Image 1 (cartoon, rainbow, N blue to C red):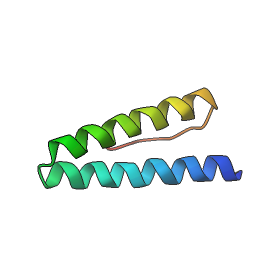
Image 2: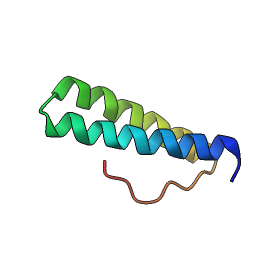
Image 3: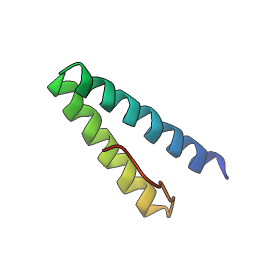
Length: 57
């Protein structure tokens, strides 16, 4: 796995975690921000052919 792929997958994992935490604490604004970030990361992964697997969002 190259550095780009590893970094992208790590960012997705961290963003999923942040999104879960925002939802659990009822922070709707932060949840929206994290969901947007996650959507962008998934688009980037798709564009570069990085398989993400199952996600929480």
